[in-house]
Image (cartoon, rainbow, N blue to C red; front, top):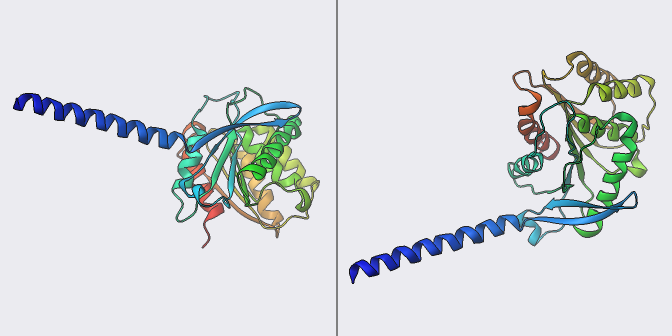
Length: 256
């Protein structure tokens, strides 16, 4: 009899633990929603991370991750999770995290910038209409997508700006050249206010091109830009991004 009772208790405990584990798993999963929005006459699927604070506060800033398949490096699939992790490390600050539901297999070259920017413009408008009343937005990306992030900073003006903060790491050589040319030729709108840019690169990238871009931005000393740059000399393109995302998010959200 005692043996039967013991087995029943053990069985009940195992079942209870399984239920609690399943419940917690569902609770975690429930913080990420998927939705569809329209861009370029197509329905595109996206996903959004909603922190616990969202249950009582829909006035939260949003971080928009641009994540494409890299053509010349190993594919990384956890960028979305790493951005969420960076948000969770903030002190007393919550944010939504938004990205496309899949990772498009495209070669994000500078000549296609407007096409990709338009997708994120439409995504921003959808998120603004459904998920948040907060107009503070951050654009984040690595690789060629990092080049898109910095080009968005340059091409936007105050009246049509989508983003306030920009986090970019390891832009492609083509984007580094295109961005340097824009700065040197002074061929972009200057009517901007209160922008932040966290820019970084690793030894996997072209040191000369990235350093030139950093020097040009520093020399320009734009009054509307708070700029921070760093060289992760002990990291590579494939393993630096968790640190970059975390430090970049901290830079744009936390004040001294």
